[in-house]
Length: 77
Image 1 (tube, helix red, strand yellow):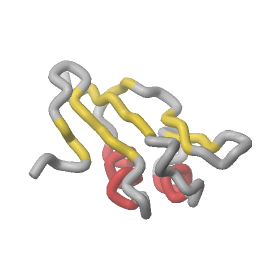
Image 2 (cartoon, one colour):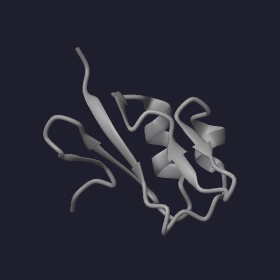
Image 3 (cartoon, one colour):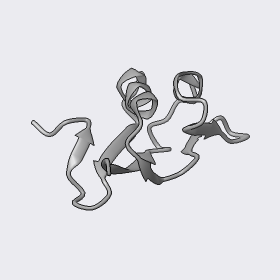
Image 4 (tube, one colour):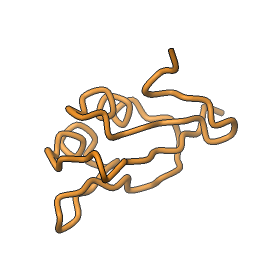
């Protein structure tokens, strides 16, 4: 069984670019205020969701391991 991730979007940082939705269409949606939300805050590790987090222009998306809380993205220094 693979890793399970917890995905969060910091809506105080999100600028509503929609890049996450275009990169991972099943992973994120934009609300009427153009704020991003993960479609499933917890789920199986997903390469598209990771690419969306890496591509977010304001780094509003964080991913941690659901079980341990260990950072997946952004990586801890």
